[in-house]
Image (tube, rainbow, N blue to C red):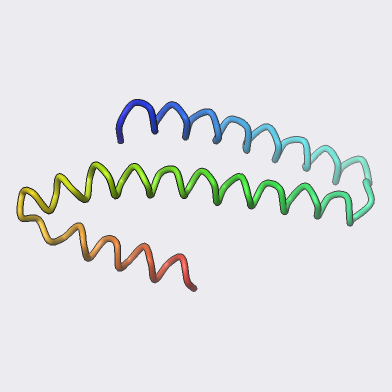
Length: 87
C-alpha cells in the first residue's frame, strides 16, 4: 500500500473506531434504537469508503505491479474479493 493510501486508511480507521465506541456508549445509555441505527449506518458507509480507498490503491499499485511481473494470481485475488463483496 502506498504511503498516501495508508495514511488515509489509518485516519478513516481511527474515525470508525471512535464512532464505534460512541455507539457502544449510546447503547449502554439506553439511547433510542433509531438513533443508534442511524449511527451504525454511518459507520457502515465509513467502512465502505475506507474499503473503496484501499481497493483503488490496490488496483493502481499492487495489481498493476503484479501484472507487469506476470503474476496472474492478482486476478484470482480480485475475483475472490468480488465474491466476498457480493455475498
